[in-house]
Amino acid sequence: MDLALYSRVLLRHKLVLVVGLVLALTLALFSYYRVEFEGVPALTPRKAELWHSQANLFITESGFPAGRRTIPFETRQVGGETVTVPRYSEPGRFTGLASLYARLAVSDEVKRRIATKGPPYGTFSAFPSVESASGTNVPLPIVSVFGRADSAAAAKVVVTRGLDAFLLYVGEQQKAAGIPEGQRIQLHVLNAPQPPTLLEPRKKTLTIVVFLGVLIASIALAFILENVARSRPPLEIVAEAEAEAEPEKEVSSIRRWA
Image 1 (tube, rainbow, N blue to C red):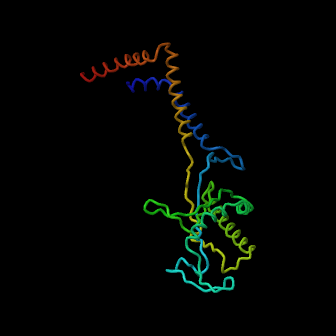
Image 2: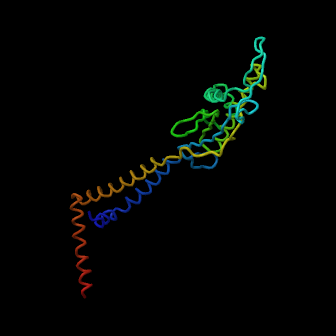
Image 3: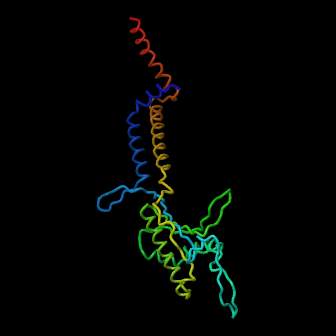
């Protein structure tokens, strides 16, 4: 394939190529943006990004038993008898509660409280935390909550509202059940809502496809017009262009020898 010969064919239809390039750029631009007429016209991306922010809650009880080497015992009166029992719950119980509290965090009541705050809106979720060690997942007495939205600021607002609504919900349920404060499960915020991170950027695949598609169609149209104008197959057009170039080469050669 002689690119120089094909270039001469395209140059004869440069107007088609210029119009095609402008059209390709315009269509590609509007495939990525839309025009909004709110006061001053502005371009707004059609596809939204996805951001998320995370916070972590530690499930424990008063006295911070996780900080003790051993669990102390105490005597209590149970059924008229004096018995010796652990002062604190088994650590494994809090680990098991992580899955339960993760479900409570996304209950309808918590979601309703988040929605009453109004925009910005997003998605609030919660999962029990695990630690990967030696190829296995070790459950932890920690609940991780997430806020997802189409902007960094909105994602942080969603997770903050969800965290506040969940803590308030648990506190109200404990109070309504008449649980003494010293016997309540405690949820401590280990990590406040973190700076948002980008999960899904805006995809440019459609924009690239539109641009290349229109540009290729313009090039094809240029060859079609050339073929129609000459009423001969494209190969003959190229051969003729090559023949036209031969005298130029001969003249150049004579001048060089002269």
